[in-house]
Image (spheres, rainbow, N blue to C red):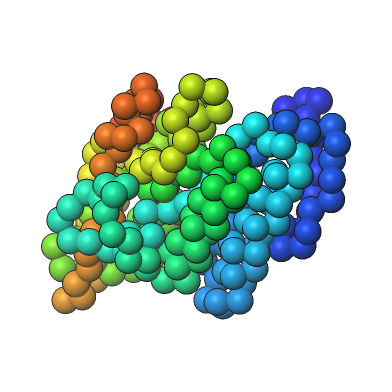
Length: 250
C-alpha cells in the first residue's frame, strides 16, 4: 500500500456506508468469490456484493464504474477465441454469478445513467501471485505434485500479465474511453501442457505428470475490441517465465 493511502474495510455482502468525501469518484470493483464450492458464497460474494457496490456508486454519483468479470461467462469452447458478441454459456458457480452480475450492471447503467465498463478477465499472471494457474503450475513443478494432463494438453487459454491488466483499467478511467464490455486477455494462447513444459524448462526439473483421457474445451478470447481503444498488451508469457529462470540461476 502506498504511503498516505486510506483503506476502508467492509463486508461487501452488506450495504455499504456513505463516504461523502468520495463523491464523484471512480469505482473499480474487482472483489469476488472465485473458488468456494458453496453456491451461497458465490451468490453473496458476487451478486449481492456487486449490487451493494452499485448502489453505493449511484448514491455517490460515481464518475465511472469498472467491473471485473470473467471469460467463464462464455464457458469452455473448443478451438476458438470468443468475441464479446458471442452467445454466453457460463461455466460453474463463478461463471454463472458473474453472468448475473453483468446483467445487473447493464440494468444500473440503463436505469441510473451509471457509466459502466466491464472487463472479462483471462488467467492473469505476474510476480507475487499466491494463486492462479501460473502459481499452481510453478508450485507443482517445484514440489513434485502430480499434474493431471487432459487429452491434447487442454485447455488452451489466453493469459494476460497483471501489468497489462492495470494499464487497461487506467485507460478505462478516461472520459473518452467507450463504455461497454471488453475481453481482457493477452495475444498468445497456450495449452495447460505447454505451460507445464515451459515451466519445467525454466525451473530445470521434470513435472510429475499423469495423462488422462478427459476432454476439455478451451477458454480463449479475442481482444480486438479493447485494442481499438488504444490499449495494447506489452508483456509475453515467455518474458515472465524467463524472469523465473533468472531467479533460479541466482
